[in-house]
Length: 384
Image (cartoon, rainbow, N blue to C red; front, side, top):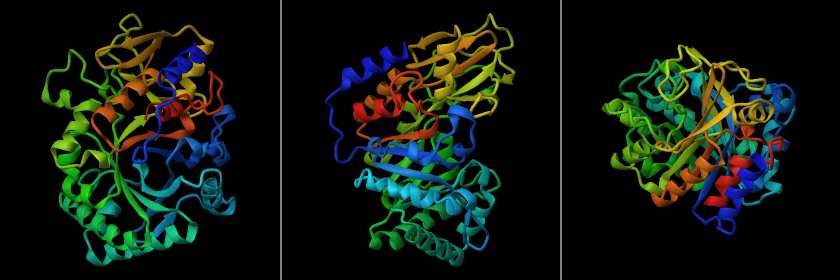
């Protein structure tokens, strides 16, 4: 089944060229080297010909404005940064960036540093030195999130000042400055001075996923393209990919600066009643952990496709939202497959966006166990 589905999507789009301004931005979660079995992912498993930009995650920030290496064993001792940047030998056109932040870093330190002109200057200069020392082509700001999670209401303004200073320092060296951002209209109102970000960043990676999950206590799609029929309140109508992109454009983002995020994973649930298994079904617990990612409430695409090969899951195409979900017994997962990804990339083209981004490369079927290698990433490239 997976061979046929991937082949159909790729054949339907074969021959479409990757335009000069269409980005395929690939985040790499460096911790995947610690996953067991077929989930273990090394830098050498990356196919750099499928991406225009590769982003290594993560480094951290301390209160002095210094960059923290979070896994010196992998990043330095085992040559992670060097091996990552050596991928440019296999594709001289690919650009590499280092990302700072992520969910685990939180917001408090970033808020503190961004609030001080002196610390902002120190941070920007340290970031420049880090990028040049280790051979990256740019720096990705993944502060999750300004004005939230221990941050301050002034973060929205201060983050705008920070990205201005990054541009002033990085642009003369020909280096990129990008950001990963919360997607929804609510996230924008709390966190982002959108016109300033659009003007000063090379591009903006919009994290149009995690729109629903086990925290809702009812089943829902990780990244629906459109709203579900039962969603009628303003808050509900915000939580789909189309509404998020519209909100960024409405708030002043140039469409060509926006890169549409695609999650290479699903959000999973344990159903309260296995017989009630549609959208919006009661599910008071997250889904069981997968064998590789080992995190309750989420499954990598590689885990999902392997599970469906090995057991009789029921797969349902959710046509109003243009994404699939699957269930077996009391386990339920909403995710993206090659068909839904192709539709999202075509949507990005219709909106004249700046490309597509994946989070993250190591949860694609990179070994080709379910069919061709990298079915999600290959679908993105084929459709742009």
